[in-house]
Structures are given as C-alpha cells and as structure tokens.
Image (cartoon, rainbow, N blue to C red):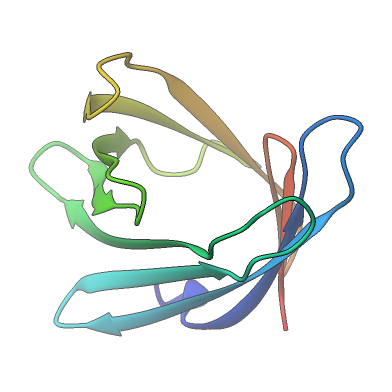
Length: 123
C-alpha cells in the first residue's frame, strides 16, 4: 500500500462528456491507507464531489478491504484479492444503493492506473 501514498491526478468522464479533473490524496498510518478524492464543480456540476475511503489488508483472508462515504449520501464496503498481474478486481459487499457490483482496475504504467472511464496518475 506504500506505493499509493502521495497526491495523484484523476481525469475521467461519462461517454461524450468533457473530461473532469480531480485530486486524489493517499496517506498511510498504522496499516490504514486513507484516500481523499476531491472533484471541484466543473462542466455541468453545480456542487463539489468528494470521497473519503479507508483501505486495509486482511491477512487472514488474503484480501484488501475498503469502506467509505461520498458527500452525496452514498457509502460502500468492498473487497479485493491482491493484484493478479496488471489487474485488481473489487467486489462490493455492501453499498447504500442496494445494488452490488464489481470494478476492475488496470495498471497501465508504474504510476498510472485505469478505472472504468477514469485515468489516475501520480502528480
């Protein structure tokens, strides 16, 4: 988890929409990786969007766990096995929307990652 510590930039968008830019900051303290995503109003957005999440490694089950809220009254808990090659797959255990899902992250370079529709790179 040490690799993620620092500030990253994030660009992404819905299909046929202009790219939106966010800042992602990770800190690591006592085995807990904390993430803050801040997306200021831009494009058609009227309000800022932010996420606060925490990650930890569950050695008993050999997986990472993640939990957090958004500032739009959403929350989730999800799990992922350690990276398999260049991909990592997160599976929802619970979320406030009530519809569980999966998301896959691909490592596209030493300091770049691709989420569905979003590119993240170290600043």
